[in-house]
Image 1 (cartoon, rainbow, N blue to C red):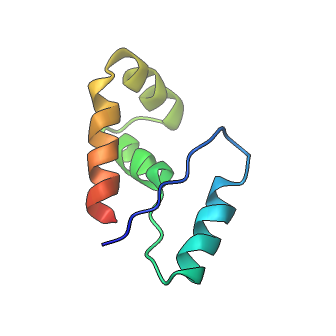
Image 2 (image 1 turned 90 degrees about the vertical axis):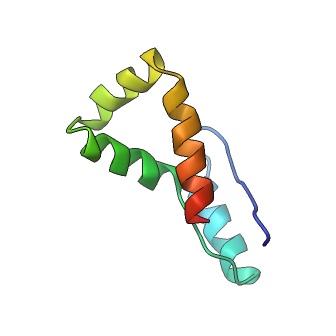
Length: 72
């Protein structure tokens, strides 16, 4: 299995780049942002609330990474 990870600051074109790579190489596109939003919803939190929660609980970043990798 091939996994390509694209990371960067908000608004720099990560999604556009990742989608183009996925299309070009016939790969599945998975977004950590989507996983983040799903987890916020599961916790009944707004994105702002969940962001603060993640800042206070850094182990959640690992869970986001694991879920994203599992989706890929």
